Length: 268
Image (cartoon, rainbow, N blue to C red):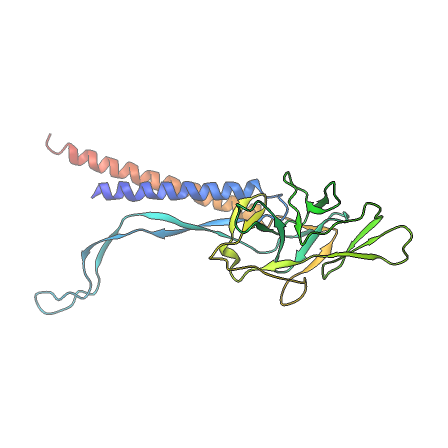
């Protein structure tokens, strides 16, 4: 009946509204370093079974098909696209990008996961103690902690994560730390918390920390940052498709309403 159509179309409008929110967030972060775009996945709801396939009729033949009426759609989840964004040359000594798989690990509040978060953003800076931190409003500290001496005149970060500094009076660069990156068996299971940060979950599995460039981990590139992997053209096309689908579901509601109005006036 038309009431079922109303409910199905209403579920479609609700799901499409969520998809629109996801697309809007992708477009808003088109220039956010290390940002990973998301997409909304849909799945159909329950079905009303009005006839079962395979049932014998009066002459002994079996019904070849069933009769099922669906009850709409819902958003089953959002899926993050971890495809690498384009590297952008900045010339800054503390800008680092991961070329390949992996995440930087930073310290967060103990109340968030296990006290650590993971990010692809490699735009780092120094805090007042000379520690390498994310150049964000919170200044999350890189783990393992690396402290740059106050008198350092230059910083060099190798592909394998070794951090060297030039200091007055020394002929050779001094090793002050080793950057590590973490990999996950299922990065899709990571939890987004904002600030370009992800938290470990049971779905992602535990992080596997190690040296960049080893065991299929990506290597590091100094003086580059990873740009957002959002493709504005694709997102705008998705925006148009979502708008048209929204209009079609609105027309379904209008048609179902007219059908119900016709039924309501039959007595007249």
